[in-house]
Picture 1 (cartoon, rainbow, N blue to C red):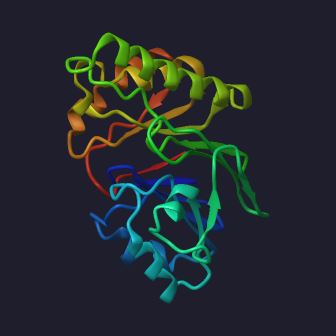
Picture 2 (cartoon, helix red, strand yellow):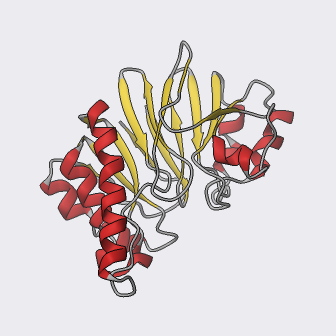
Length: 235
């Protein structure tokens, strides 16, 4: 399979007979429109939640040129009226979608929406959406930090009951959080054996996102240092 970094938290996954676009925000490098939308095989568009940096309603117009698209969205996108009932298949936490090509299970988030575990071609792929240990150490009170951490570790515990290891994880490493910005990612790889780790949700702070490499590698992960949109890796 091949992973392509599109922008922010958006990635494309290409299998032999399928393509998946995750959390489309914008086509920064043009690869979606210039190549992926015309790629043969099944075509899936997934969105973990309604926030505009994870869901762009433009994706619904793609069906005009690609009528076979399968849309798999978090149920909050319907709730917030970003799409209609007939536009997509909607998943809430612990719901499953499965066909003869992929299996998708929705897990929780510590913001809104869900995270996704995708199983395809004997690989397990995790996209965290906005699941993270969201606290701002320099601004939050100790109680707020404790509450955020408890909520996050609770979601990880649920995931870890089902998942002991993944082949690929796309996970937020967001420098806006201040000095603890890697903490959620650290706690994820501490608990779930991750073969390949790719940072996301870092805007264009590539160096700060890639600073997680040392910790990831100390836990046995191969770390992909992202440097530009359109970057690809085989896995």
